[in-house]
Length: 92
Image 1 (cartoon, rainbow, N blue to C red):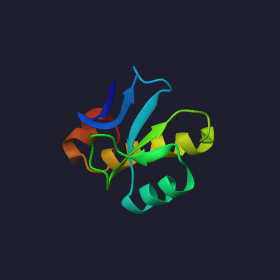
Image 2 (cartoon, one colour):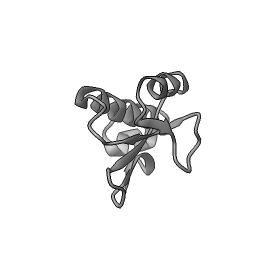
Image 3 (cartoon, one colour):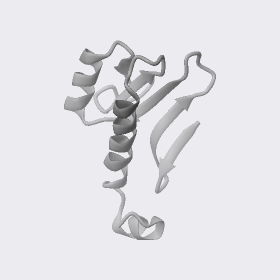
Image 4 (cartoon, helix red, strand yellow):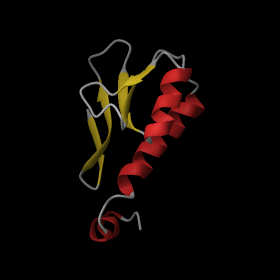
């Protein structure tokens, strides 16, 4: 499942995986820190590994951190949208 904002993806959920996996855009420095802190955070699967992490949802990542990672992914993608698109979808 691909989740988009303004036509750009910010999350990919592997619904067939067990446990579930979600790929999220991340600041390159944050991506490395998260990978070093949690075994369940890996370089983006089939994505630009500098800018994407794949997170295995095995309950080893605190919910608060996971929500922050999702929010950051959304923010990183939405801030790059054109002004016109931001106005159309109401993020400006």
